[in-house]
Length: 143
Image (cartoon, rainbow, N blue to C red; front, top):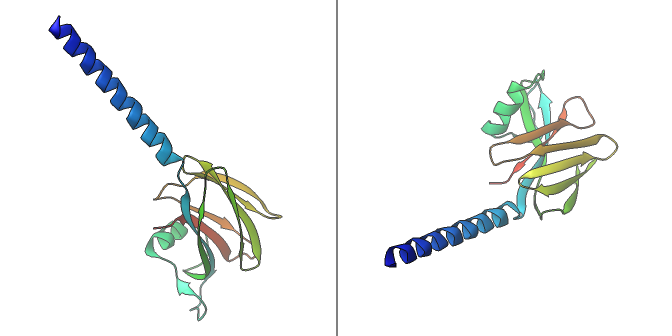
């Protein structure tokens, strides 16, 4: 009898542990997203305005079919967005809204331009063109 009681107790503890782990994981997925939005300008000439993009962003931009040799951050904002909440931004005259859909998914709406929905894990970057041919919004999780 003591063996079946021990097995039942062990099973109950394992089930409780899994439920706690599942709850912690669900809670972590619903935390605020800390994001950074950058207005980036591409150029084939040396820029005096702005600072060069980070190596990670440069690598992403160089993989895209863009014709610019260098990229510079001219404006940047860091912010947090709670799950199911939105943040309105203005970067370089471009108005946009970032919504946290939960589970590291965001929706970026460029006012008068359209909407993009994408997963945005720590290692991912969302890049979209803004008004001018050589200007882009780069959205990623802040470090």
